[in-house]
Image (cartoon, rainbow, N blue to C red; front, side):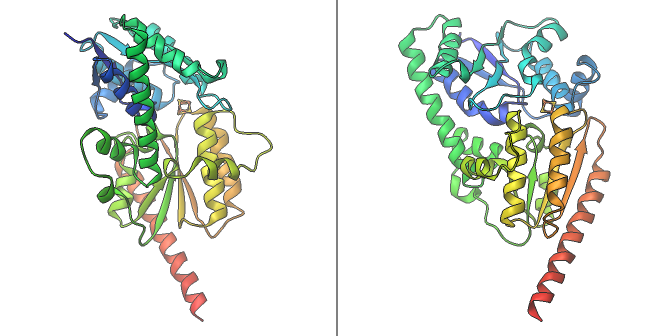
Length: 332
Ligand code: SF4
C-alpha cells in the first residue's frame, strides 16, 4: 500500500500545494489533505496552540489534529527562504517544533528545511531529502521534482491570469478549464491584500472575498500581481524583512500609485507581529492617495459574520458614492 502523507490545508498550502501534490504523486505517495476549515477544526487548534499565537497558526494546529490519525507522515517543512532575499515570518521557521512539542500522538514529521540561501541547488537537495525518506532512487526523485516545478509554474501563471489559489488548484487537479474562471473586470474593483492563508480561507476570513463578489465587486489579490511590478513598487529604503509582508506591502504601494483599483482592504490577523508594521505602513501610504479608499479588517478566532458584513457594506457604499461624485465632477 502506498504511504500516505498528510498536508494541512493551511499556511503554505495556498502557495505550494500544487508543487507538493505533484511531487508526492509522481513518487507514488498518496497525499491526504485536511480540507476546508470548519468551526470544530478551529476550536481544536485554539485549544492546543499557545494562547498568544496568531489565528493562522492556531488554525494550522487544528488542521494537523484533523489529519494526524489518517496518515503515515505529516508534511510540515521548515520554510525559511525561497527567494534568497526575504525570509518567512519566525512562526514559519519554528512551525515543525511548535507542532512536535505542542501535540501528542503525531506520525513522523517530514520537516525538511527549505532555505534557498544555502546555494543554487538548495531546493533540489531539500526535495531529494524528502524522496530519500521513502527509500526512493535519485532518478525517480529528480523526475518527480521536474514535474513538480512545472506544476508550480503553471499554478503561478494561472494566478497571474486572475484566478485565486483555490480556483487555480481546481484547474490543475480537477480538470477545470482556465478560461471560464478568469475574472473579467467590470464595475468596482477592490484589492483584498493580506496573507494567502487568511484571504483565501473562507472560514477564517469570514467569507470576505465572497461577500464582496456578491455585492458585484471584482476582487483581485496580491497573487494576481506580477512579481516584477511588486518589486519595483517598494518605496522603503530596505525590503520588508518577511516574505509575505513584503509582497502585501508592495502590492499596496503598487496599487495606490497605479490607481487601478477603487478600494483596498487589508485583511490582518490579530496577534500578527509583522502586520503591526505592514498595516501601519499601508495606512500611512493611503494618506497620499485619498482617491483610493483604504480600510483594514482584523480577524481573530472570535470574528463574527455580522460585524464584517456591516463594515464591508459601509465601505462599498462610501466607495460607490465617492466614485459617482468624481464622475459627476468630470462631466461638468
Ligand atoms: S505573518 Fe503574522 S499571521 Fe502569518 S504566521 Fe506570522 S505572525 Fe502569523
